[in-house]
Image (cartoon, rainbow, N blue to C red; front, side, top):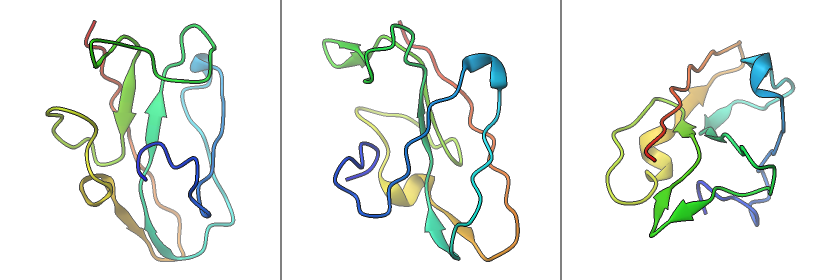
Length: 95
């Protein structure tokens, strides 16, 4: 289930240093995709929260409005039609 996608058959997980600023993913088939990003500041492999509020940075493709909890896949989804597509993800820090 988005944004965790641990059990998603088509999920792709990548780790990059924050200084890289961008990530290129190649070889994707045309279809609908969504991107979820976390700034895992302490390197524990998960988004840390306090009382349900993220303590680390996070962001999603299409930069949807954030309410209570993460957005649905449809709010972050974008079509990939076979060419290249670029998604800018705005990182958000709440605490």
